[in-house]
Structure formats: C-alpha cells, structure tokens
Figure 1 (cartoon, helix red, strand yellow):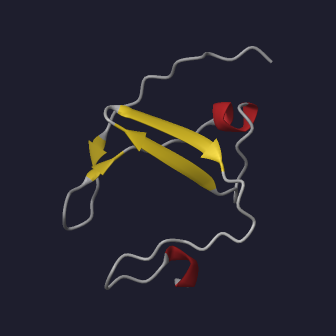
Figure 2 (cartoon, one colour):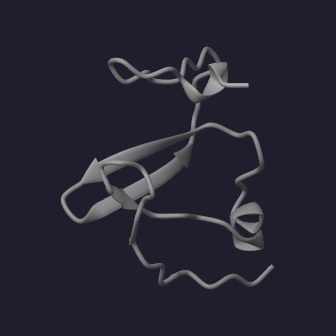
Length: 75
C-alpha cells in the first residue's frame, strides 16, 4: 500500500490543568504503518525529534507519575 512518508500535525494545548503540549495521532495511516489498537509503543525522544516504535517488551508496565494513577487502573 502506498503511504505518505511525511505527515504534518499540529501540537495543541491539552485540556489538563497544566496545559502541557499534546500531539494527537490518529488515522488509518497508523494501521497501514503497522500500529494497531491496544499496541504499546516506545517513544524515543531527542531534541526536536520523536521516534515511535512498536514496543518489543512483553512485560510492559505503564509508567506512573508521582501522585497519579496509571491509565490502566482507571475505570
């Protein structure tokens, strides 16, 4: 399947109290690139660069920020 190699997305403010930057990723192009619903990914962060890869870990434990519950434990 022919896919665009570059996508232009806009970083917006989240609606959380801290108004941190938010980069929503959605669309069929994610599935075409091999990313499926429920899949965990690793995000490699470099200066002005994000690399998103399927997680190779099978014992994945979501990160929990101090004082916040994991999204896995929410109902």
